[in-house]
Image 1: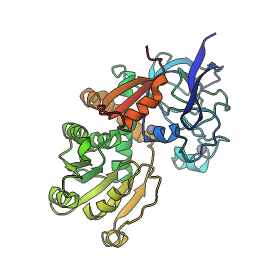
Image 2: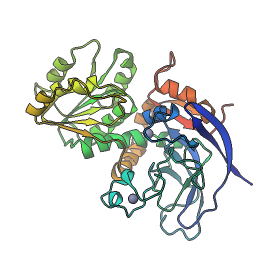
Image 3: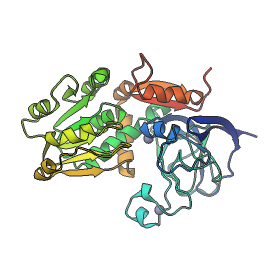
Image 4: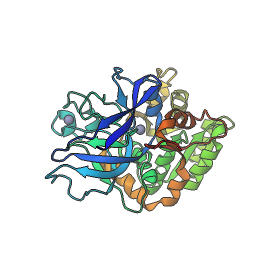
Length: 368
Ligand SMILES: [Zn+2]
Ligand SMILES: [Zn+2]
């Protein structure tokens, strides 16, 4: 009988391949044949066992899943528009639909399940074990949300919907960027570049992206994707350049995507427009020391923290993915089989000499 093969995490940096029986599907359930996973900073933290509430029960990582529908449960009427063989992206969160968080649209805050059902975090002891993308198969229960991928988009490209959805969510839906507004993106990684694409599409007036000297190739990609200007914060005067690029007024929205750094947030207060918003989207693993709170007060600023995305942003992102094949080819730099997850993460972190990574994809295949 066909089985799933999955890379199971047993500890910080400790992984083993294991086989699992494929689940018997009930009404509304779907079995996805996984084709690709996007990687993000949270995978790095999870790999090292640093994520907030992991209790060390074995689990299958991988939460940015794209694949095709292999099987659907009987009498599945809640999946109209989807059929076996369709390519889909999987919403990382399975929500109950009836708890207070779900009722206000905060799916990631769902408290309606005994175990929090976020792909890549659910222990394999929770039936039917297949809750992660570093596996040949993933289980999607009745309440799991699937997004149909247009047939012309392949699975590797489809994983880019995640950083682009983030861009919509952080800069526009939550950051409040309006047509003509100025956006300052701190950090030129895939999330920063996803925000460039989303903000350009949404009518931003000016988009500026910052990076380090070693990020030059990513800053060049930012310019090709539609950024108006870039700032090398190591060789240029960050605040002076920001003022110059914003006609002395500052930026309406600052989106901080820099991993584990707080200095960019602190310095960006000087580049913020009066009444502007600073968006924080990533884990810092430290406290926000040195924040110029008085300057922030006089500017009447807003500091907002929003990890993750919403259904609307996911849908907008898939449209953008389908209509911008050229942009996607700029963003995806590496593909690895799941037997090389450690290498994939090192490349994503920029720790492999000679490898310039933006979007790194892991497939459930063994490297030949
Ligand atoms: Zn992610
Ligand atoms: Zn809920």
